[in-house]
Length: 382
Image (cartoon, rainbow, N blue to C red; front, side):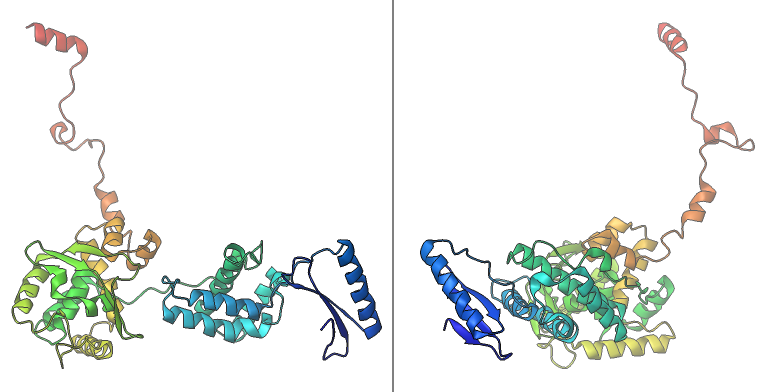
């Protein structure tokens, strides 16, 4: 209909654009004004003077539904379903109440800041505040690149909340030795040995199969992971990059013994049924009991991974070595696994000697003096 009465009592004039792709609309307080405008548009359309107006920007709620459908499509294989559901929950709880009925192109940085302030006022953790910021920044970024709705991202970088990095619990070298000896004959012992010696994530440990271990070459291949929330195996580990590592000899010997009595393809299966996956909650509970029995810090399965860095750094591994071992995307992530990075600095400073001291014999510090050019020629002639 060319004239529509709105719930507010106003009247909207509507006409199809010259290219017939969208409707041109305008709202007036009275029907007479709407009729007059409609007549003017029809006259301009006949004369070829009617200018096509750009369609209005969608409301943020409308765009979010379009964006969410896009990231949930089969083509968006890079997005896991758990991540997708998390974005929906974050938008529903924190963004929608503030900006849901705002036009997308009308959102300003100040409005985004209002969303973040609301999250903070709800006493949500800094990590939650950052998650909300990352959501809106990605959403607006896609509105620019994928949908061409915007030309500017209102979620500017300086609004990104700072999250304090907590040092993860880990064991020192002596505590690691005590734990390894204690669990040697326990049902979860091999799992703990694998995590400590190779730094496996729990999902990688659960998905590890005997075909991934080459005992002759002493190599362990990390090819897949188990996703507990979805109860399925993925054909790639975290970061989507398969990688392999040399197995330390002590672990290699233990694996050879375990393989001889293996009853299933999984290296660390459920203790109840070898065909089932290792239950993470049972494993964590047992690890806690082991730590309490030894009176050492109680750590989780990821604490074992952090403790791996203690083993490797005490044997001379560098930051780059640890990055390769843990398959981290950057050294900044690896730094979270390194404690007391400057612990050897004082020792090194005390042994640095570039020049001899007066009390040291010359032969211990300096090589023989290099002959000058004249002496060298004389020596050759003789």
